[in-house]
Length: 513
Image 1: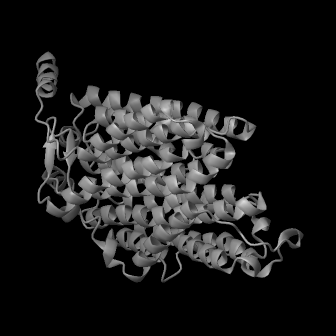
Image 2: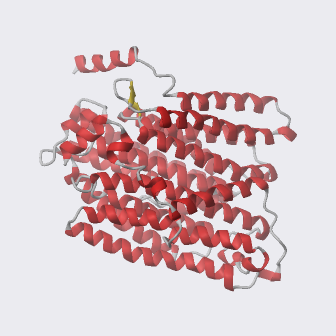
């Protein structure tokens, strides 16, 4: 035991560091320090520069990601295989950086007009994004937990950023308390896995756990780790924090939590399932099957009753998480493991565009109406037809209506489930089909209000949309349309062999199959 721990320790003492491979992380670290120093010296009238600089930091970090993706033809591994930069990691790093850039565009005007502290906001967001970028490359329980806490702790503070609003304070407190509780459960599960397998490296854990031969400690460890990440992705019954947090937090923060934070939880969950639990499918597959069925059903049913559009989008986010979970319920099946990974990654990419776009329209409309009620969207087509069309596109995409991106994400998820060719797969696909119809009901309710209802109080004055929000709407619209019209643009972004570039991942999955 001591010899094993000593060997692991020495592996960390003198690591071989590929500075090019970790260039995105380095750019973010430098950017965090620059923004922090500038915030101390800039006058309040010039704080707007921090948003522009934060955007450039995100784009600057995106440059080495694109470079590595274009010229890289192999996997780069550091710290004894605990930190891996492959095509799977690079695609998701680029996704998180692009999402954060769009959120910065959505945040800039609200922070300036609302009198919020701007420097600290962008520093915390950059820190959270750094944790997400690290999460994509983490292949060890310790590095995964560190990355998770690095992305979560700033998010707790961002949720309560509107400190003059009691709802915002409540949102941050609920998110923090339940998040700490979930982290404790997950860390306890990780400690059990370490005690049972004598390793924190995911591939070594995966080689130790064997279906049909799992001890009670190993079973509990697997369940606790998945439960911890189920909180992060707001899966039922771990979703109770999401509606209040999403409603109380500033709307750009809500968009950030519903897309980037949720996606980071899925990335960690996927990495652990494919690397650490491929031979424990008898344990995790039934658990995730139940989580997926409950999450999409409960989220949709509760969304039907909402009158506040942010709370409706909160429950919509819960139900969308159920659709993303659905393929993972069959990740251990030999004929579905590759398509399941593909479906999850593609769904995350598409979901990022369409959900950020939906929140951007909410921000734009609420600047005029000063209300979060669905009824406040009444008559939008009569005084802002362009915005009404954008609302229609993003909400129709969330409903999965062709030719927008959401249809391909859902189609890919159904295909992955049906590839399993089992009775349980057909049952889950049937539940998902019913939930797709249910979700269309509340999305169409919003569109009916936009196109058919009268404007509240007869106010038909035009909407003044700031340039940063217009840019955010443009980026998300392009992403939503391109994926829907040309699905091949992302169709291979989740291919098991081409995307991961990780021989250990392929070998472990093949052994598990």
